[in-house]
Image (cartoon, rainbow, N blue to C red; front, side):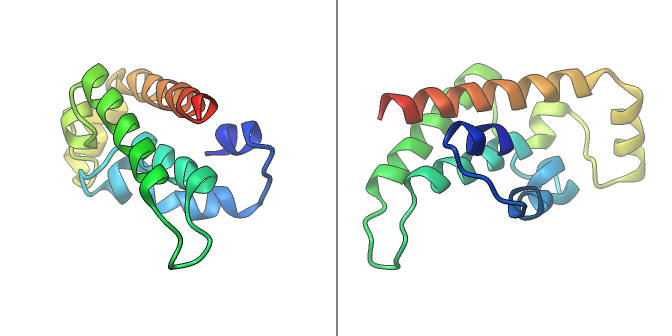
Length: 123
């Protein structure tokens, strides 16, 4: 989120805070990958509405494009499916930490950032 916010020339100390609960498959529940959640937050930061009555079409379309690209490249958007570990269990978390999976997670973050910047720059 910080990388894309920087690309958009937006700075706030709130970004790491609001993104924290989305990390590790939404707080280790096995849900959506944190890189995917962060990407959606970034797209919303750039294209989201400012009032409840604003149109959402442009933001939704960009999110759908991103989700399709991410799933196509990596096979899923969910942490449990991407990593093979349920981070919410002691055994799953320990196995994840003992594995080399963090390198793959770093790739998810890098690629999701690249995808978002590309989608936003194409307008």
